[in-house]
Length: 318
Ligand code: TXA
Ligand code: MG
Image 1 (cartoon, rainbow, N blue to C red):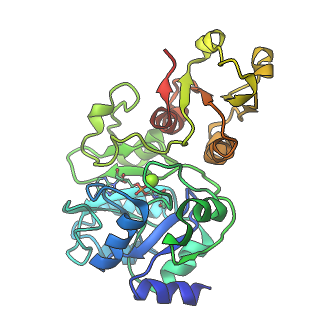
Image 2 (cartoon, helix red, strand yellow; image 1 turned 135 degrees about the vertical axis):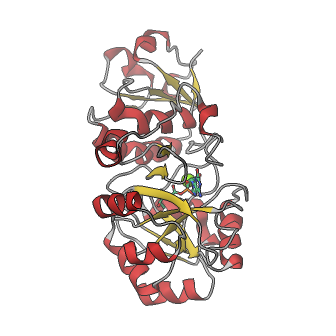
């Protein structure tokens, strides 16, 4: 299977593969046609840069002209893992992959199948999440096949993703390291290594994230209309007449929601919550509900990445 996958990559074709965060839709990051095929398969705007995956630090160094002490320390601590580091781009990474930016987001994923593939291929694999643009990110091979069908040449099945939401994207090209997308590695964990790290409050002021193209779109969303509510708003939810057609995702179940349709009680632990979030939304999305209501987790640092994904998937309850 890995041999076949490598042949596809060498030939400029697309291979979906598991990572610890979500499944990626991969192509050779040094082949402009192959990278264009990713954008076509996803229906993704060409202005949204892709993350470039490599097997190890040595390979990462080949694809940036600006490997730094900070990059080295971070990579040594967190790779393989859910951290993407934005650095100056090496010319061999095609402009298509970075949407014309002179920087590249590099990451070594923590999944045995991904690592085997990347080692066997030896180069750089550009891979966004393996879903159609604006759809939910896939955390199983089945999600990928359901969403992309024959737009992808091969799907490597590595089971369900253990982190469940996308990597933290950290920009090291500015004066202060800046989180462009919250994810599996928290600001506190990064500050432990780097000192001060900037994290624009994406929930309160999404405009602050303009430096990361593609971060502004409604994203990671189910096809079913989805509405978010604060815990204090629980009493304000009055689903439409056809009671069974509204799904509700809550932090802990409450009796008052019982008769209104499927209720999913999510784990109170952010790590476990992240593991299940997309799978739960995929499942509810498949039930053709009228609305999915999602309770927003507490405004605490450990919930930042999850709050970010929920905000992108929903409109607020008014
Ligand atoms: O966990 C993940 O990161 C997954 C797996 C497959 O590795 N990939 C993923 O890729 O989420 P994607 O394309 O869905 O999200 C990549 C985001 C872009 O939307 C952009 O915001 C940011 O990463 N990004 C990538 N390259 C960048 C760059 N050079 N400068 C700034 N932001 C960049
Ligand atoms: Mg994505």
